[in-house]
Image (cartoon, rainbow, N blue to C red; front, side):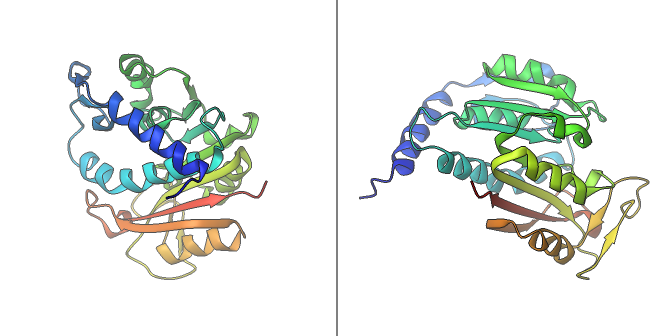
Length: 250
């Protein structure tokens, strides 16, 4: 039998999680949302098109990385662990982190597409406390106090300086950095990089191999990585998705 403290804490956390999701509530009156909030035991409308299939592809690995990082940060159930979600849109993963047992979380987004506006209302309706939403450009995150876990997910391909944003994200993380990025399947070149992204007037795009090379060349401690296809996206330039869980030496 495994008596590791992280394993004991994980069993306690999962038990509490299943109890919290046993009561079905509804967010349907808020209209279509960026994410499905099924994790919280609620019903809601989700925006049509790419949103549902892409969430189904990304969510299992991102939640797994949050949960593993949280477990590794804790030696007891009383150990406080903080979390930040960059490019948070409606703040779903910032709320999910609190739901999974994170002590306090923040969601950061520039609200370019307007999804961020609903975040506070959803958190209030779900009863999520200690979850703060900050409208901020990711280029300014060095002004924030470092947090234990930082998740750079869902928006790195939107910026023209992804390498610099990665470095800022790593500096913001005390213990773990979670990275997710969209990569092009139209190229397998190890040095491929375009900015603006193909067909766009903004953003950037790596191939799977070139983005993996970028991360590996930083010398960071990669403890897990993953790749899958974003089934909601049609263009080869938008279909690849890479994931990294990076642990910092402390």
